[in-house]
Length: 434
Image 1: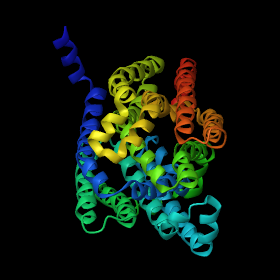
Image 2: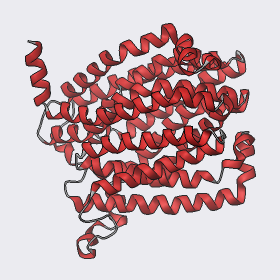
Image 3: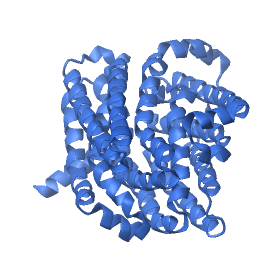
Image 4: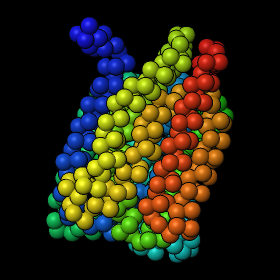
């Protein structure tokens, strides 16, 4: 019976695609995990904190650059329209990045004082570069996801992870500074996007479209047709990024860069299962559920099955961290990182539910729930912010703030999964054209 199940799984196209993407994510995560104990012994908590704060700000601002149009690249039935979306996304990212660079050049001091983050003032002008490169990377990834070229995505993920992590150690031996880590973050996105672009080998590039073919897909008409993405998905992603990045920014502001560094490592380690399994499933599930919708398959059953599998897969690793977190982190990353393990044990519940909700989030565009997801993010973020504030202002405790943040976040994730599965039951096949 077991052999029959394995044979069935190997013949399942969706399972094979997940395995391909997961193999790339697995390779990249293994490389990162192998290098991280060396990196944490070269760069201290304060340096990690500066990097974490910078990355948190990038995560918050990134959705605003291309207004989430790259996510729509997988939806059109013809490639001409999809390439138009890619071109629109790239143009928006360039213009918004240039505008941000000018704004920061004129008001850098005000921006730093507003967030009470004087420690990252020296790195502020890296932001527009990192944001633009992040947008370029997302465009390339979404195009390859549309074409179901999961093999290229997997290979590039492994190569990029090895090169960047090697650079962190190699350069860090001579200069273990935040400038090195932040610069490599931007370089990593550029390298990743360039490698994807090279391996894609698209016959008709985004910026060489036939004007006659492209006239019906002008920027304005595309923006209007896919207006749900900037109107609902961009604020949703922005608010979600705020809710996830706020602990780093607030820890840096209230307790200093070192405390933010401990949280950054904890979050990095706890996010790995979500990155490895959740993103792999999400990337494959997105086009899969669109195909299922067009062919009239049972969407609810597909969502429940995918979510249940992730719940089983993620249970053991997260449970281990809950029980042995501080000891594991001290042994793996160095004795000074035990505090990160304490943070990680409280973050486990949050990231466990974050892993399970990946199929539900992937189904949102097809189900037309952009507006509802935005409302959910507003309420969810408000709850998590309240939890952080209670921990910081009432208990004056970083651990209590993180614990409340995690519990509230996990409960809202659970509610979202139930809500999307419930809404999928009433979904009609004609909506697949959305």
